[in-house]
Amino acid sequence: MIVDNYPISDGTMIVKISGEISGIKSIDAIHEKLNSAMDSDRVYLDLSEVDFTGSVFINILINFSKKHKERLGKFYILNPSSVATDILDIMNLDKVLNIIHSSRDN
Image 1 (cartoon, rainbow, N blue to C red):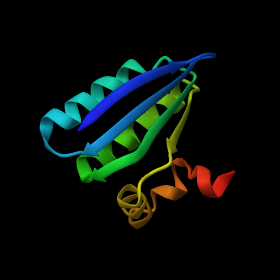
Image 2: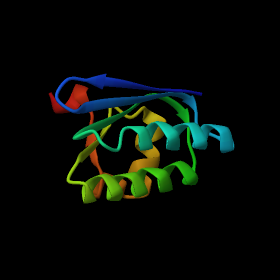
Image 3: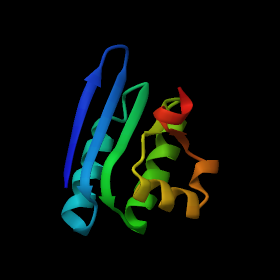
Image 4: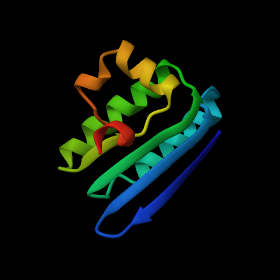
């Protein structure tokens, strides 16, 4: 798994995750990158290259979304892979998280 932050102008941060999200090292790396993006006005979490994820990652998403919203920030899930989309849909998170599917939303 690879996770990187890409700052964009105007207080926007893209956090991109690639590969399989599993194990404590993966979760710790994601948690660290999201926390470092907390002060950004807008955070886009790019899940377009995620191959696998589990419930601990979902918990991180929900917690980050709540904390970021408390700071009046905006948080978006960007282009989730089919694996990520299936999990988000099954857990009805498409109702509580801002999810952008660029091929369908543009």
